[in-house]
Length: 122
Image (cartoon, rainbow, N blue to C red; front, side):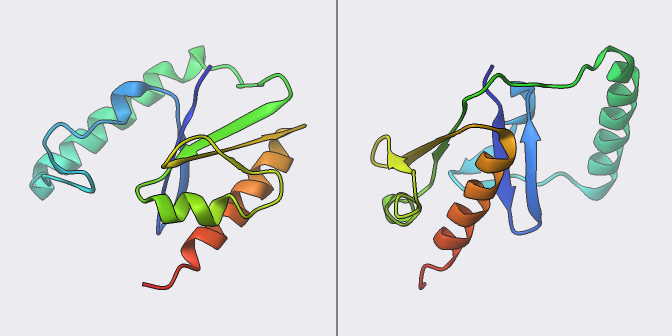
């Protein structure tokens, strides 16, 4: 099973449903058209109601080891920086990967990778 990890300045969120990953009106690689506040509030309420309806069917996600993290970043220099972390290797011009024995190890490595990538000078 693949899980998308979406990160921004506010934090990190795991997303399993692919319908959550693509903005409907993508304006650019890093931007999308914004909803008017009243429409955004209605969409959030509808999404929250759907999540509550689905809650009884949810089961813990327990991936079997080893756990593999593969990340595609927006710029090759970010992949260069992430690949400096112990055990992280390049998977392409924009990608890096890491494999660890458990989720805690992978999570800690992700935090280090993210901090190293954020250290890039503008």
